[in-house]
Amino acid sequence: MATTTETSNYKFNHSMIRVKDPKASIKFYEFLGMSVVKHLQFPEAKFDLYFLGYDGPGALSQGNSTFDRQGLIELTHNYGTEDDANYSVNTGNAEPHRGFGHVCISVDHIQAACQRIEEAGYRFQKKLTDGRMKHIAFALDPDGYWVEIISRRQGSKGADDPEEEGKVSDPKTYRMNHTMIRVKDIEKSLKFYQEVLGMQLFRTHEAPAAKFNLYFLGYPGARGVPEDKFTADYEGLLELTWNYGTEKDENFKYHDGNSEPQGFGHICVSVDSLDAACSRFESLNVNWKKRLTDGRMKNVAFLLDPDGYWVEIVQNERFSGQENF
Image (tube, rainbow, N blue to C red):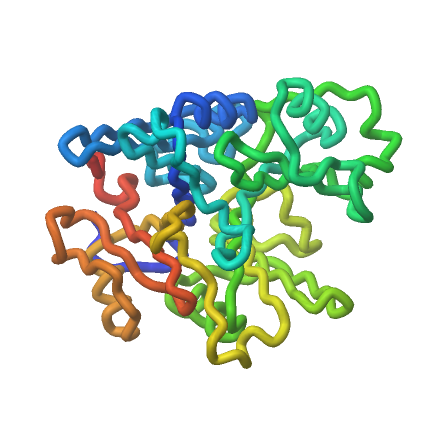
């Protein structure tokens, strides 16, 4: 097992969201081509965790152990919520509790993929044909979380693309491309994710007319950062959305998803050496939600990013040679 740590070995492993009914949620994400790669049960604490990811022959993390992957979605189910008529999650997209925005799936043929989702009876926040942006759609999962749909085909014009017409979509070819969170001060957030967590900036999209910028970060691994800035074929990226001026408002704050009303829980980075990584974080004077030594679970830690979002730190099993749980 590694006794030193290199951020080049880190992976953006998963994003956690709380769900009301795991059967309905798993059915939805399996319909999008994902499969349950690990199910952890904690009956004494009355919750279960389901880790879903792409595991087919063409999947980038196919066959890897759970925490040696990128682009997983962790569903947290607290027992009994499925029978509570009054239970609902905070999706992160309604005021005054905005923060987490969406997860994003990149697909082979976006017209066919969106048609397939609609024909299955799932709802959309934005259909491909809605509005001015005809190259993206937003489906809604059973809890109302937004799931962005984008094309893996470079140059696709989405709803206005004749090359997309008449195609058949294969969910096994999809990627869990990115997770979006809104941030107050982009300079502080970029410094944290790049200098503390070791991510690299893949691309930036500036929209001055709409007064926001998007920043896509991740761990490039052997593929490297794409020279042409086309990122839809990657998995496990982090999108930071910065709305101009929020950094100047002393009272402005995004909702972290863990205070009430709850919804999104955390993002997770797996590391080569959990002890060495946490020692490094300590030396960088990070803010902790939970150190390794806190509480009963000695195999996970939680950092706080500049907006108070939780960042779980876990051991990548490829370096330790044993299962975490």
